[in-house]
Length: 171
Image (cartoon, rainbow, N blue to C red; front, top):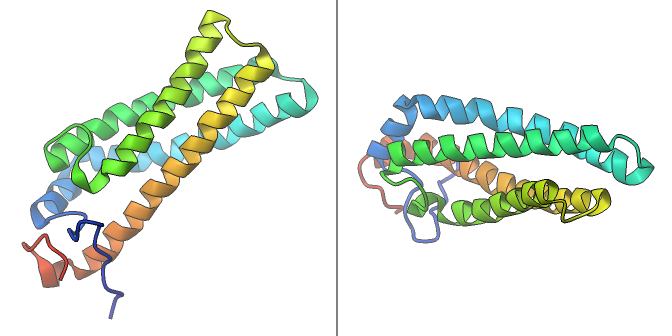
C-alpha cells in the first residue's frame, strides 16, 4: 500500500480531480517536463563556467554568455509555467497549490534580471557580475528544490487518487 499523501499546509490535496485531469491532458505539462531538465543542464554548465572564471580569471565572455543563456531559459520556463498554471488552476500565478513556489520564483527572476541589467548597464565589474550570478543560481537551486518537492507530493497523491477522486480535501 502506498504511503499516505501529505496534505498541503491548508489540508488540500495538491490537485483536485479536475485539475489533475487538466494537468495530464495539457501539452504545457510536457513542455515543463522537457524544459525543467534542460534548464538544469544549462545551469550546471553555466555554474561550472562561472566558477572557472571566479577561480582562474579565464573565460569571462563564455561565462557571461552562459549566464545570459541560463536567464533566457528561466524566462522561457517562467512564461510557459504561467500558461501551465492558467490551464490547470485557472490563474497565471499564485495558485494556492504553488503559491510559495511562485513567490520564490519571483525572487529568482528578480536576481537573474538584476544580472542582465547590471551587465547591460555596466554597473558591476566582471567579478561582481559573476557573484550576482551565483546568488541568482543559489536562489534557483532552492526554487528547483521546492518544485521537486511538489512533484513528489503530486506523485504520492496520484497514487491515492482513485480513493479520493472528487474530494480535493485530505482526510
